[in-house]
Amino acid sequence: MKRGAATRERILEIAEASVLAKGFGATSIEEVIAEAGITKSGFFYHFRDKNELARALLQRYVETDDRIFDEIFGRAAELSDDPLQRYLIGLKMLAELLADLPDGHPGCLVASICYQERLFDRGVVELNRSSVESWNARFRGYLEDIAAAYPPREPIDLDVLAEMLSCIVDGGIIMSKVLGDPACLARQVLAYRSFIKLQFQPLPAGSAMLTTANA
Image 1 (spheres, rainbow, N blue to C red):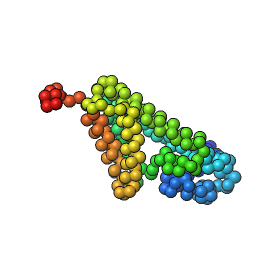
Image 2: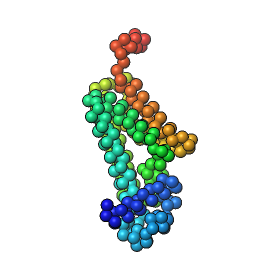
Image 3: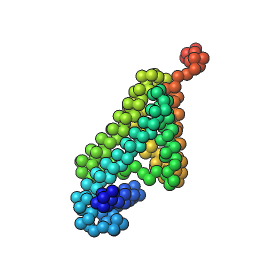
Image 4: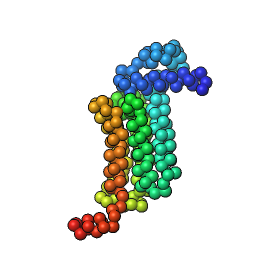
């Protein structure tokens, strides 16, 4: 990595850690400059202002998450041709990845921006929204493949079910931090996995007959 690129990456690492710890409002350019060991002109060479820094942080965060999802669910697709099993395997691998974080998940940059939207220009806010929509569309696609092969046991909106994973992850991050229990996040993802399995996995023939008889 060239020196300029390395400096830019160092700035982003420092800024992201600060933002996740205390929010954008409490993160100053001056403290980032001091920790990075650069001059103010050095900072402004890479980022025109705090909005540009926020945009770069968000793009970097989204690209990292997209890469993780591509790797996890791509690997799951290699392990099974069945859409339901692929999704269940991917969720298990995601939970294992989250459980392996030594100090728990550091936080969600998307949520941090959402909480302080008034600090940012429209471009940052729109990027935040489109990022969430992209993740929802990804999981909606997985669920559509599952529903085509395995009709859900109860009527359910696949858009809501796709959104649920992001809600569970963000909620799990908050719960982990509040309770001081890093393992909470992985448990929540596994609970979502169990819900998906119960919703779509076919009942054994005898069980289906019993359910019909009792209806």
